[in-house]
Image (tube, one colour):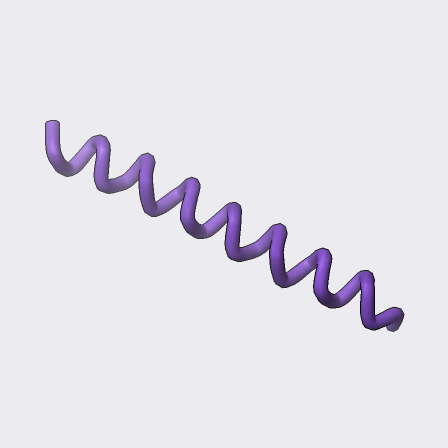
Length: 30
């Protein structure tokens, strides 16, 4: 695999996990 592709996948995964975490915290706080 290409290094750039790996970095893109890692960044995308981090953004996704942060987004999911924010949604979960939003529902927990309610």
